[in-house]
Image (tube, rainbow, N blue to C red; front, top):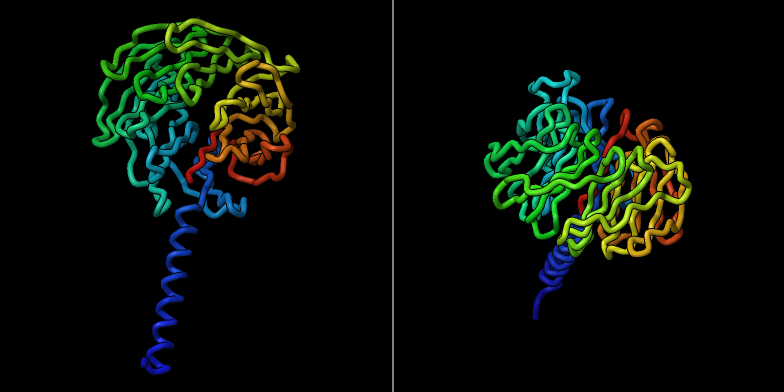
Length: 333
């Protein structure tokens, strides 16, 4: 029979093991939002369990487009300087290690990178170069440029199909979407859309692409198989200036940041009808949705904050102050 002291030691070990497992599980389930701040040249880190700011990371220039790597280990941020049409040392994709919350590398991607997308396998990144009229393909394993492709005039948004085969690049001045074959790294098509297209996202199955048009005040729907325009629908109030766009994990809802209208529109992705229009902060630009579809976060560029929207009630449940001119928001689980 074990002595009382031995039993006590075993109990302590067992309790410590349970606590270690619980701590590990909590760490694995933790979620953070990363907000790129164009004006203050930094990234704000928000703990989504408390919706409180837990850190700020300085970057080399204006922080705009921001994405999470498919393995959730890195955050990519498009950074640029204030010198248009000239590539400088600040024009790059900054790479943040999530575990250490430190900038660990920066990959040059041409002049004035604004937005980008990462392939589902995490090996390549396609960035728009607003001043150069090009898109740059980067090998994320080596940091080397794979291709520089001529697209439309003033390219803005970039989206990659769920199967990784196609990259769509919106161009605001030519009002077009360029289609890049990621196997050959060549432009294989162009489509005209509404005025000043900004952001493109794909439906979860990849059958549809949705493109916001800021001046047109609309969203264009593209059949990705035929590359036909299926619909171009205005948002309900007719006053929206849509920029950022997120789609719910089940593909049923679109969440459209209204820019200068200071509102977020909730749209049925099948009927294209506006379900709700929600007042958020000033000039909502970027928008992201949690992986479970429960909350939406908007980066509000003129009020220097982030709005939290409950997707069940379509109401704002909180506001978080961040840096100066928040531009984009990305959520890591």
